[in-house]
Amino acid sequence: MHGQKINPPVNVQVFIAKKPTVNVNCTTHITLNKNDDVTCVCRGEGGNPPANVTWFKDGKQIAEMKKENQTLTLNIVDETTKGNYTCLAESHPNPGYKDNKTIVVQVNFKPKDTSITFSQNPAKLGNSVTIKCDSRGFPPTNYTIILNGTKTVSFREMHIISKMMWNDTGTYNCTASNAFGSDSDSNFLNFTTETGPTESPKATSNTISNPTNSSLPSGKSNNGSVTPPDDDDDDKGPNIGLIVGTVIGGFVLILVIGVVVYYCKSKENNGRNRENGNGHELDNLEPGQGDNA
Image (cartoon, rainbow, N blue to C red; front, top):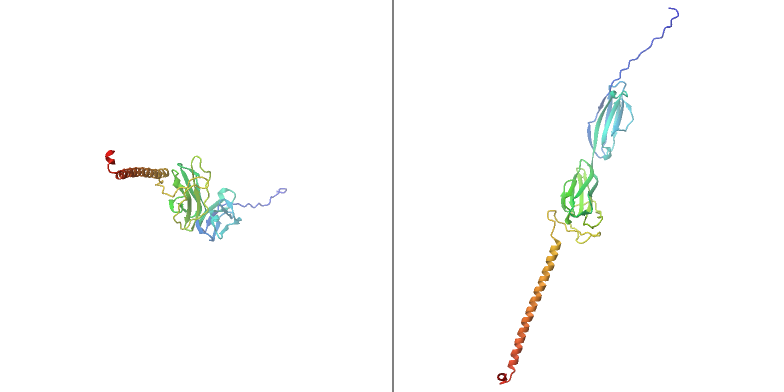
């Protein structure tokens, strides 16, 4: 045995990786009000080696990696806080040794950034026009579209005028509302013919409160289009040309009748005057003159 080299003993460690299990002390869906605070603790339990735990929002890492547990804190939340928050626990780079859990955070807030738009403006008479309201809010908003402050045309975010008429023109107001408040926007819808105007004015007021009866002024607008009266959609209004023609015709008929009557009266008076004149001549004849005649 002399001359043989004996190797020292070797210590062998056997490592068995184990997948962690993620536990979060929050519900999977959280709804908060503006300015609320919330805290969620995530634990990566049972992993071998001990798991690294990290929080992500919508796929982007938002916190440092920590061993076995990590706390998510949201302070003074607003609408930008909403999103999907995921806790990831990882014991080994191999995907088989990872676990995660996602919670959905929603934040209640009143509608904002409300707008109302038209598919065409000015709109050609006879064409179809789509009116669209848009707003951001949670819970989802309810919509009301009002024409000229008095006429409610829709309780939905979209209203379609199938055939544009004169009395469809005017100021349209869109109000978006939910349990936390409301917001509104207004815009003016004009009309055009083949050679009509090119653009309509933007309404100056964004909010209509306690609306009262109003109507559009008659005549022409600054861009040359006729502004009609405010009528119901079901009654598109009288034919203005027919009314004007009827009135003028009536005046002409009255005038003609007056001239005829005047002419007849004058002729009758002239006849009476001639008869009276002849009678006076006979009375002035001397006796015997009548026989000689």
